[in-house]
Length: 219
Image (cartoon, rainbow, N blue to C red; front, side, top):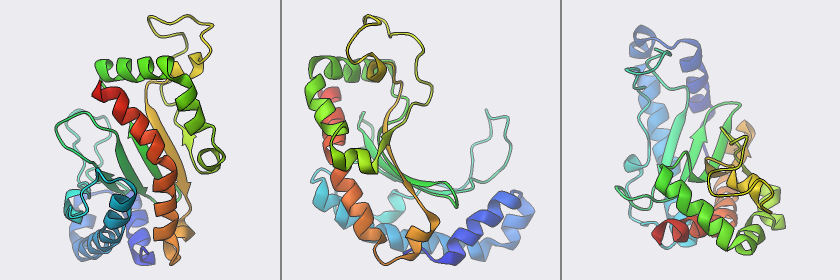
């Protein structure tokens, strides 16, 4: 579970995104961060039980992303993120689909897959979908997947990607630039004792999707 005070803190960061306010509320940040780390500690063994490639002994602090924004190349100069982001990466330094938990009041979600992969990785994924469309469709069209996840269409191409005809049977899937499955989460879900089991079920549902992508880029 996530404490209500943690969600309240994130809301307040969004409304007071400046260094003076953050410094005055540093103790609230530390308490919220500790709360999220405790929650992540509960999720790590559950994810590892679903995906044996994920290390069960990974420290929670290696999953929690920094709240401090890199504003060097951004027009938005807010110094802090208005969320807690948790990245569950199986490996670092190699192209791998990942699991990601986003905690933000009114916009929380669990995601899995590749967000805006490099061109060579994107090419491999598209080729795998082209060659093994039935396997991919069996995953994303299953009742469990469709009732829990939706595929992101962020920055989807308007035309067929190079090398594919516009009348390709899976052209809408091949137009995707990110292969991300998203499971929205309501704020109230984090206050329930069932949240860990809910997320474990979601991990189980999206695992075949992750394996498909993992196999695609491993070739």
